[in-house]
Image 1 (cartoon, one colour):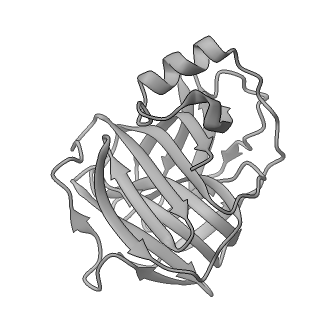
Image 2: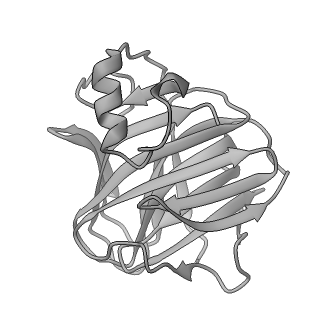
Length: 221
């Protein structure tokens, strides 16, 4: 994975109150089908454009509420963009549904945990051409924790213009990536123990990456 120019988008936290029935239905159809709804501590399906995620618009990228999720469109090569809900967790399980709407399959998208600032965080990434990895950014430098060779191929990753269910467990020193309810990668690292969570999407050599996120969960592990 190449190091990219990074842009961090901060936003204020807005609490969403959801009925237990609706939440159970969404968990059943999400990457967290086996998780007790009682352990959910934060959820957003992006139906409310005032729910607190900061939108963004520039020549390089746009982040906007869409009819069925939060849309990231990356218009410049070798860029990552992300959004954070202004929360703080030590141990957490995160999950989201992510869909490539259009653009190159050589991309990346996924989840952030223990985010300190734009120079220090963990990222759990998947690409639409079947690769994934657990990344540490420390002092602004990328390190692929799962392999010195970079991202690894995962047979469970759905390729092309389709939806992948991504889950990240950040528990103690153990960082685990699941894709489509299958365990993919696991590493140990203790550089960051607490921080924010969020969503990330980016491009490599080709711009035009359009990713839609829906059903973002944070749960107690």
